[in-house]
Image (tube, rainbow, N blue to C red):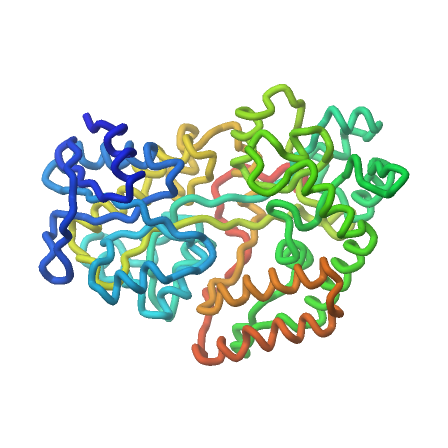
Length: 470
């Protein structure tokens, strides 16, 4: 049995370790390029807090494949499109065979020549077509790994967003619980504002003491509100981004109105008071009974159990523009990829599909409060934590960001626009034009690009019961 304490101590010191036949071996010198041992698989693994859980996946594979060595390094993706570590490794021919990375960056990294397509491995080692094989994962997640006619990885987890509700505060305020029940569908923006105006408390100087919601807090963002309002970010027909479309402008104007109505400076000061930067996970404005609604992902369920077990809460749908609108959420997640220079060996492929397939996801997902993307794992009642059932069901209505080679620039443009709207430093009209001018010229360098049919939309074949309230 592998000594996990030894593993975590080694990884924490920035070392690599090799797992072979159930033992941990220190590793300092890496073969590179064509000199690599085809039975040694080099993995840049999961984020630091879940290394021990990843080890269980590696152990399970090693028990079935004792002749394959898995060398693990902790060099996670930061989720913001920073390709510097991969670029350095690819150029130096010292990169991993398998890389655990933010899936949204897949198309961008592929366009930069940093990733190997996996179509050839599927054709060589599987008994089905590439399309049939990839159909074993949720479609939007495989779409995020598709670029220029080829697939560049296998999806791992995904994570929808919901609105957590402090039911104790809701009862104190006399809010009808039926409005908060996801079975009754999402509340509208108008209903949200009615609650906001009745619930918020400010002292004589105008300082917030209690708030309903914060439209940019945690997983809430201008990007999310744009997706909720049906904004399209890219046209397959014209190969142009659409950040200056009338629809995007309307959302930017709506968001600017929200910020003015809530008074950004006072609400920002509230957040800094009750949840200052670098505060411990126990110290949040939601956990301190100062905030009624919190928009975040399924990991919040575990946080509630760990840090605020006495709170009576529920999770409901994100607000929607009009009463009676269908539920909405958006989803992201991570993936396994093979950087340029990877061995592309059968051993690497076997571990790759094991980790991202049913075996690996069914071990990992129940422990990290994430949703599996492998269809077989989704269908297995033991394949994920039943406490996040609502978030899993939400995949039936989940949208996703367009998998573009300028994905990071698009993200940055939306975050910059959000910051400027929060500060009221420019008009929505100017800001959408600036965003388009920042992203689209770069996009044109990659055109023509055609995204998969139905990109960004919910998977019509997602194998979970109907979404509550839909």
